[in-house]
Length: 394
Ligand SMILES: C[S@@+](CC[C@H](N)C(=O)[O-])C[C@H]1O[C@@H](n2cnc3c(N)ncnc32)[C@H](O)[C@@H]1O
Image (cartoon, rainbow, N blue to C red; front, side, top):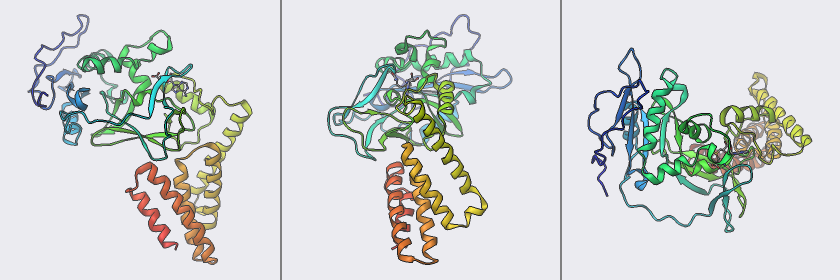
């Protein structure tokens, strides 16, 4: 295994495209923790700002990672724990309970094998990024040509297997649609996960997690470790053998209407959602929209100054929200609504019928702790707070 700080690729940097006016800047200092010499270009005519490609072909047991970033951003990624032990031997993973198989009209998808199901809170898979790019918001001042060159180089420097796996994510490959953007833009547009880190927004490509399709009532969610940038896909509900594993590409706690969701899918990923909710009969979609509108109204009421000091009103709103979330298959916001209901009961217990309110409050606090445990882990502050609240109510 090559030591991390050894420069393994002594080939000269690829020449830039002859029609390109992008000039590579003078050679950069040594490769540091990277396996390739950083390749940098000056991105502004008026300053010496540089954007570089950093590649560690050893990352994640030889699967590799390329980053396009400013040097200081890449350095902070490393100092914050992006590359630990990447040259260690590959761990042996148990046989996964999922498989990637074709899904009609949606390319590929992740499905549970005909084996035991996933339980809520169970980790389905752990994935690592193969590409990290600055997000389009933070690169508006940089020419498309420059960006495209850097992204392409980042892709080409990945080990061959990872490179072709990453390339296979291009939408145009499975949709049969003519590609209207370049290959990397195509890959980013439909597969990138956005992540804030080192004071900037980045687009990350996770080749396995990218195979997971969207659903407006998801049964899984993703959680990214901010230091290592590893992504966990976690079951939100029980997922039975043969079922598709789906997560929400939108914030799952937003009560968006059918139309609002389609607008976002079109703008963000260029698809029309075919999940169970979005392909339901018209009257069901209208009923769902009405419930989501009610959710938005109730959440606004919670912000009213009048409501804020009224425990009975808060409890009533939280209970109605729980009914609506349940009906809409919105699992994640149920944690907060249960916590709110538990606090409502706590304050009501102080003003009479103590035992009745305490009993109800304990039930809400317990459910909130269960859901926060799934979302943030058993050790999280949220779980601890709900356990304490349950104790206060006993
Ligand atoms: C991140 S990829 C998901 C994996 C993809 N199906 C594949 O074969 O690689 C996102 C793309 O999958 C398709 N897709 C995902 N969820 C969908 C849904 N709910 N309805 C329709 N198409 C969906 C769309 O083409 C979308 O651009």
